[in-house]
Image (cartoon, rainbow, N blue to C red; front, top):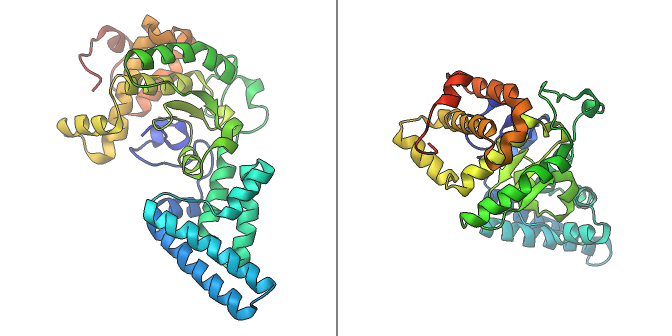
Length: 318
């Protein structure tokens, strides 16, 4: 719900999108369209083939290694098929424990899998792991503008944390939502993320409902507009606007499925502009970014002028 293509409202639709600001490959689109249960079943079948091939080749030495690798794929595939969520192989987990690097674990796991012909889910993990650590072209910070031409948030991710973490912590506690999970640059916490979380966060910068936290996929995303937008998503969530409630409200207003993304983001940007103008939830620090926020509102087919937005009162989030 909270991650959209390139953080560019013009490209947004409701649901799963490509990684923010990076090139989403055809492989990623294909694997994202697959039910993990089917991928897991396929991995288990391949693993069974590895076991049989290894034992048939040699009951000792290299044959046993191939068979052991096959059993690893079988257990991971079966667990994925039953749970509906991607489960790592022991090869991956042991390498991660030994190296502390998720990317290194993916590469070694893929190498072992390629040797046996069962690498589909591991190729997906590598694509995801490398995409989330893409922080944009060098020199972007010096220009003061993102590659989309938006003003970067002065002070970067640290300033965003200082500006908004306290207010969101208080809001989440006061509303009984839970403990706000913080504001993070994904690449700095990548090795602490599960494969399932990594898969989701590879979709781009977002407020991640599961962790009650905001993750920035790229330094290029730390603009005043995007910072404010993700903070506004977190505010809305704390006030009750979860995915289910958003969809229900859209249906009550006869919004077509393909239009829900733009419909909801018009409301997000309107509230964001109002909160900036009235310095609610600490958003007053984004005064210098109002033009970027309003431009994003227009890209999702917003029809109100800034003056109309500031003069109107809305009785609900929807």
